Image 1 (cartoon, one colour):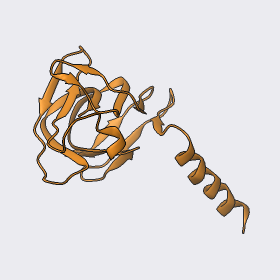
Image 2 (spheres, rainbow, N blue to C red):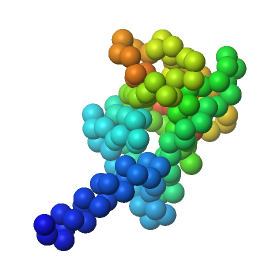
Image 3 (cartoon, one colour):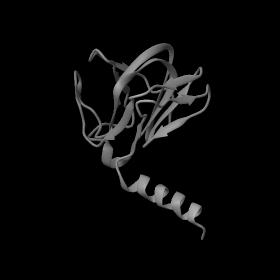
Image 4 (cartoon, rainbow, N blue to C red):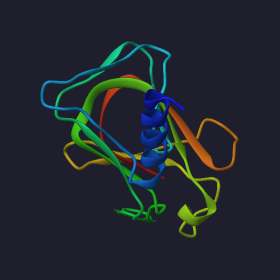
Length: 146
């Protein structure tokens, strides 16, 4: 096995053994083309138009619930350090039995913006273990959960 293959295998295995996240350095930028999907530990983000994830943004999965107006969320939440602003996208929130926290498969997606306001969005698919919502109008995402 050559060194390059070994290097990529180590990165692959390390990415599954640590808390999955995306972190864009201070001089970095990730351009996600319209229709392409970036998957951050089970949160799939598919922009409707080209979208730049700018320098300093971190997207991190947490295995904790958050307190919502209608009760606690599932035990899986995604935090954006520096909100994803002006994003029009389809989001797919994937979860497992251990994440459900007493919530049924009829869960709604909950988005908290950078001002701390939370909004619930209907699941647009009929698939268990995922909640899908489409955001046609540009939205700010600081936390995503269900």
